[in-house]
Length: 324
Image 1 (cartoon, rainbow, N blue to C red):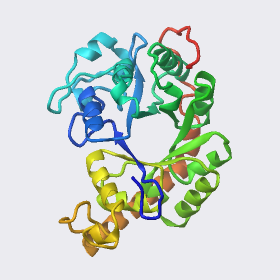
Image 2 (image 1 turned 180 degrees about the vertical axis):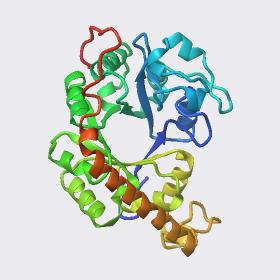
Image 3 (image 1 turned 90 degrees about the horizontal axis):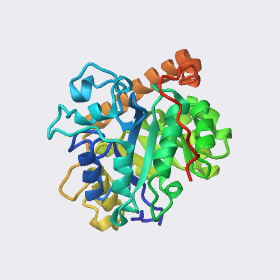
Image 4 (image 1 turned 60 degrees about the vertical axis):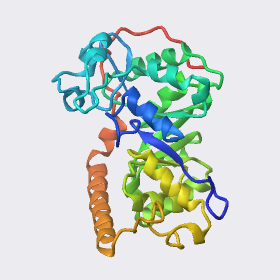
């Protein structure tokens, strides 16, 4: 789909799958996202005790599975036997399961955005991930379908080492992300509220001038979905890909058929846009969030830059080739 000026609409990237409808980071959530038309799936990588790449946002099992243990302290067979607290109960999948699903001919247009978490030994996690990808060939090469997300330069360099020819994106926020503009092969996966204001406007302009990709997370309010479309970002990471695609569909229509006729806040013709009060609350919330993130960056800048660098290797080092 395209906007009225011919600009392609952003990709709908399902955050941990179709999280709005299913337990996050489960095969049900991934399949649900594909079924509603998501262009891509975002998911998170952790290592089990026996060195299997598992899909979990948290390093612990408490929030999603109700078990007070760490992913890294449990074997993959045990992790697979657990079921989510959220209904319908679902097991924790391995990366190989998701790749097998996406490797089916009917799903080969769907791509994958990986969040490489910093809780495990980085070398072990990246090498195991490369091994997993190599073990599951597909008709459309994985380096055309997988974007690797790293939180700092250390992870980005490891991605270059283990995944030559793959697309790499810095996961982060402003102002920290400015330092990666000088990296020639890095796209951006940026916390959306930090892009508001003059600094964000300047950053978006620089990214476009450098012809990099820009993805934003996590966008669930319809107003911010529309904002993202107007900013012509390349992808919107959202818990509700179905809603985002509805918003995109309206933007692809002529103004006379959009319901409000002027690109306002309607996902479908009968839906009213946010009131002035609600919109003001959205911007106030975003501003407060910006203040928090900027303060966090000032205090923890060096810590963010060093995430993962001092992790001891607790798993057995795998003998792994780079990903093809």
